[in-house]
Length: 103
Image 1 (tube, rainbow, N blue to C red):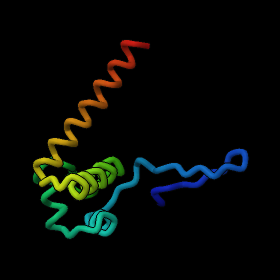
Image 2: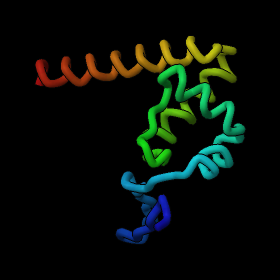
Image 3: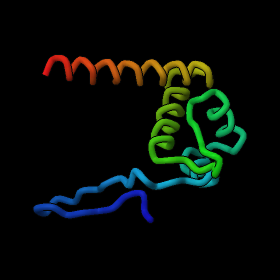
Image 4: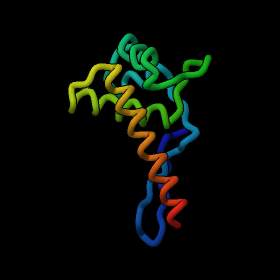
């Protein structure tokens, strides 16, 4: 199954991510251009999580891509990346709560 399905609506092509797609360690490493030891560091620091099958959901891939970008752009170590992502997640959660209270 492809991670992206294409649909056409009124002549506009729309790409829809398949959120149920699971990725293997090898696929994640290829997509993110890291080795298995590098991937394990992200797991060890809690940046991403895996299940016992060692497969990763699309949301974990998205989070890893964000982590890699933070690490490259801001020169953060793994602990810094984990903290930054947790804070960004918390900010997003607070914004959702505020929108519910305001609406």
